[in-house]
Amino acid sequence: MRRLPKSLLAGLSRPLRARSPLPPLHPPTPNHPKPRRFPFSTQTLAPAPPPPSDAAAAAKPAGLAFLEAAELHESEGDHSKALDLAIKALAPLHESHGGWSLPVARALRLAGTAASRAGLAGDGLESLVAAAEVVDYLAPARRGDPEVAAVGAAVYEQLARAKMAMGRRWDAVGDLRRALELRTGCLDEASAELGDAYRDVAEAYAGVLDFDKALPLCLKSLGIAERRFGEDSAEVAKVRRLLAAVYTGLGRHVDALEQIELARMAYERLGLNVELSQVEIDGSNIRILLGKSEETLNDLKRVIEAGRQGERGTRTSICYDG
Image (cartoon, rainbow, N blue to C red; front, side, top):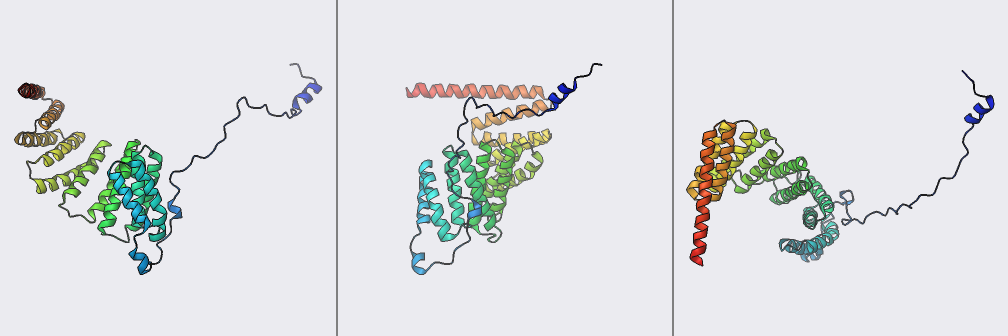
């Protein structure tokens, strides 16, 4: 094998001469940080201040006035104005009540809700997360306080909606579960509001296909609805349809069909034709899973005939009015 000359080897081993780098074709744009809409963080929240004097307590704090005005604008659908007022309320509320206080949590929740509805998803999520931290700080010391439970449940429910809108459905289920825990601490076990909360969390678990956790919550919601509204009510039928979906997800098709039949009879007695058609279609899908194709065809024919009769009735009423 031919060997390279010594001088060539020395030239190859010599380090390359340092050269200045070539200038970029397009100079990079300056990286200016984006302005933050929410100039706050839970790390900067201060504890509650000492009790104010009698004169200061008698006067209405500016923070609460801003907060009430923000809530009014939010109820009227003016999300931009509500957001501005909620942000203005934060500094005076922080000064008068302390950062880790319920009024600050209310303002943060309202700011997050308004921001989310105004299209500022990131800012809204940041505000709602801060509100949740304040609620979790207050909840252990004020266990059973209905005001803390109500504000905390509203915070976590809105946080769940914001995460669902961003596609984070698994995270949203945990927030709905936390809202349910806060409600169970202060609501009566037979209250309709608690029954709705059980149903919402069960529906969220079913939405992420966790049917094992959805089942006990759905059964609790069904029991409350039966005691509050009666077995033949539309509210109970609605929960039965959800329970049928949960049973179907668990592979318990016979139990699912039983719930569908009970819901169908309730809608039929109440004369709710639209809901009746929907529940009959649900029953047809379950019968297909059970291999009952002939009964499925009969159900679908009944739905089609009911739809035709509804169209005829609509046309008759239009001709009569004309």
